[in-house]
Each structure stands twice: as structure tokens, then as C-alpha cells.
Image (cartoon, rainbow, N blue to C red; front, side):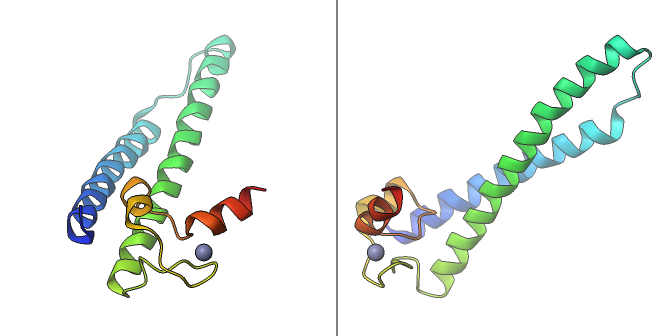
Length: 109
Ligand SMILES: [Zn+2]
């Protein structure tokens, strides 16, 4: 895989996430208020799940956007930690990463 095909994959993934967040927003808009308190508790639980999904969706969208920007700027393959080149195998597996293997490992420990 090269950068061009990974870029396509990221754009498709971004569209996917965008569709998901649209559905989540539709859920918030269309949901009628619950009739009684026991129902309200269930509704709140569901909304928490959707809320956290929404946040994760947003985070994923942000990291994809950043990766695309880094591609545009020609910085996609450059590690933000040490400035060396990120291995292509790593970028193929983790296209939104900004760190090379050794910087990522250093951060984990
Ligand atoms: Zn590095």
C-alpha cells in the first residue's frame, strides 16, 4: 500500500464516521421525552452509551483529519517525537499515528 491508497481508505472511513455522527444527532433530535421516571432511567443509560460513542466518533474524525493534513503537508511519514521517518508498515497498520515505533514505545513506558 502507498500513501495514496491509505489516503483513500482514510477518506472513506471519515465519510463512514460522518454518517454515524449524523445518525447520532438525528437520535438526539427525534427522541421524545420519556413518559415516566422508570423509563427516564433507561433512556439516560442509552443516551450515555450514545454520548460516549459520539465522543469516540469525534476523536476518530479528528485524528483522521490530522493524518490527512499531515499528508498534505508532507509530514505524514515524519515522527512528531524525534523527526525521523515512521516505518511504512506501521503507517499501514496505524495510518493516524504521529509517532515512530520507538517514540510510541517510549511513551507507553
Ligand atoms: Zn520517533
